[in-house]
Image 1 (cartoon, rainbow, N blue to C red):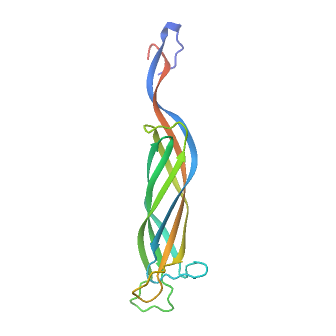
Image 2: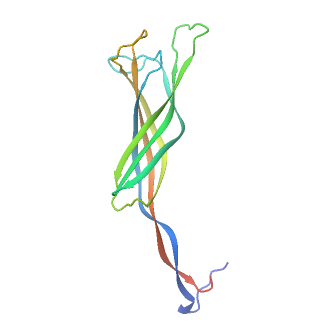
Amino acid sequence: MDFKIPASVEDVVVKRIKTLVLLHKDKIIKFGEGVIPAPVGVEIDPKTGELTVPVEIVPVGEVVLNPKIVDSLLINEGFIKIKLIAYNQGPEPCSDAKTCVVKEATIPIQSYHDIEGICPDDHVQEKVEIKSISVMGIPDDSVSNSSGRKVNLIIKIILEVNLTICREEIIPVLSCGYL
């Protein structure tokens, strides 16, 4: 269709359309943290909390965020599932020994952001990027029924989130009468 300039003002009409209007756009940081029991064989340096065996943390699936708006607050509750892989560092393990131990866990994510003027019916879109995952050990002081020391792992996750909040509105637009 070719663009035509209206011949007169009478050919221009005002129409109303429903569209999303941008209210807020920002890049924000969200945090997740959880404490899980360490798999058997994972030990720590009691002075520093550093793990004595290599551990890898792999996200499983997507980050789940459930945004809710209450009184100009964007409240987010969600989680990320992870797979923790601890590699056996034994000197010469017997043929039956596992080379690694895998443990799955769910790390909760909670955040709130005060954003003036937003309402419960606004549309929230969040694009998430995992910036960092860290793990540190802490001794578990409870009594163990098995040999060895019990250890807990603190897992921290930092997310960078591109946040867009829009509101559905009806706006006037000018239109040529022959559309």
